[in-house]
Structure formats: structure tokens, C-alpha cells
Length: 101
Image (cartoon, rainbow, N blue to C red; front, side, top):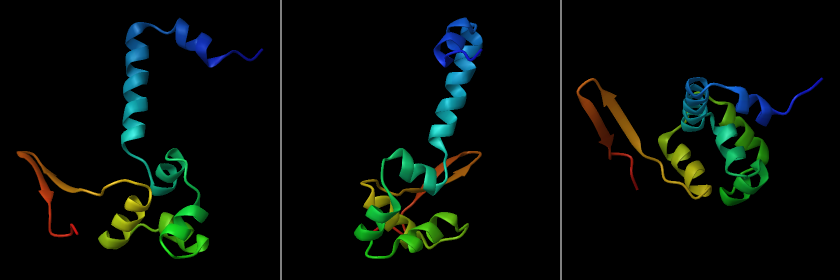
């Protein structure tokens, strides 16, 4: 018989629940463009209109592994976000400002 997820959560130990919460937070902190768009409740059609392109163009962008920084910035800004580029090194992180508008 199927069980509710809330029942399973209630039966988890506090340590296991904490690990699950950490995993969920990590998944929310890193996701592909398509998942980000969906999580922000936008459709390809609405972004295409905002970016003055086509829905297939948005689909292609979300599938690419390599895009211009300017294109990525416009995509993120069309959803109300702001793109920051950060280089992380063992001794610290540096924000890259060369590509900011």
C-alpha cells in the first residue's frame, strides 16, 4: 500500500532528516536552466517574449552546454534575477566584474 511522504518523514531519525534537508538545499542551490525557469514559474513562451526570441530558441538555450555570458545574463534578468560570476579558489572567492552591464 502506498504511504504518504509526510509519514515517512515523521519516521526518520533527526540525523537522517537533517541529511535530507541538506540534500534538498544543495539541489535547490544548483540546477540547470530549465529547472531554474520551472522553479521560478516561467514558461519558455513568456521568456521568449521578454527576450524577443522564439520558444524554440529558449529551448535550445536551455539545452546548450556553452553560452555567452551576455545571453545568460539576459536570460536570468528576464526572470527578475541578477547574474554574478564568482571564481572560487582554495584561498577565497573573487567576483568577476568584467562582464557586468
